Length: 387
Ligand code: MG
Image 1: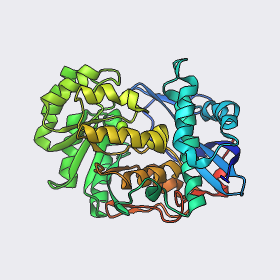
Image 2: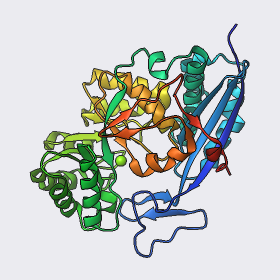
Image 3: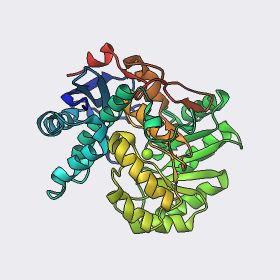
């Protein structure tokens, strides 16, 4: 008899930060009463808090699985979809049907035009919780459930060099290289003196052998991006992320054809349907699926499609306490086309206080968490931040 699902519970978290994600606020930029503010350089809303949504799924036997999804802002929006719609649909189902449950959830709203966004994020939290629950029920880590634990050490690049000045950010990059890391990425959204000056300072600080990746935060038209990248190329840029608007498939393809560096994108796409036109247009050679927006089931479908287009996978890492980060490591360990994982030190290292289990990134590699399922779970301190 299957051990059927008996309860699904969501938790919207609000965790204080000393400094906003991506670094100090620009002069005159004041958060509103909900803690939200817009970064002027990329027109994107952020929060002064770390928000995410956790899901606890329980089976008849009392076994528990934990999931988490991205909820950079308004986490109650996602939690409500879980509590009022998706959670009740899952009760009584067999957790080993996790792929079917994911697909049924996607089908349930697709003809109404819910192909992604908050709706898919809610699906994701449950999907990850069910994979964790399967691991708890079988005694196997998620990577083994996916059929391949190719490694237990996953190479990373250090992402985001938060600092008030260009010198601070370059010095931070250098400090990571001294700790045994070999790749760093800086963000155009906070490169206030321009991307070329930022690139020059970071290259000077990290030396000639370090890979430098540049996140352009969707800020440019294709001709602008091509011109900028040509100016960055003499400094040895290895990868350009998100050069043009998320909707601009043709523009991204034009960039990819025109520059020597790799083109990467994909943190904003959640399904094979969103990725498909971009693969067909050959507009990237690296994809960056975000586990907190894809879940394990969709992540594996996307990466299988990437394999058919000979694209490498460098998974994105967003704001959370580490549950979907662990899921991303397990899924990455099962890939044949995995290249490097993003390491968001300003999130992972701070929020480690909210998990039981080891989420260790040192000397250039993430260690795959050990134990059944994801190998880690939220602790009471995390749940105390539910609001
Ligand atoms: Mg990015």
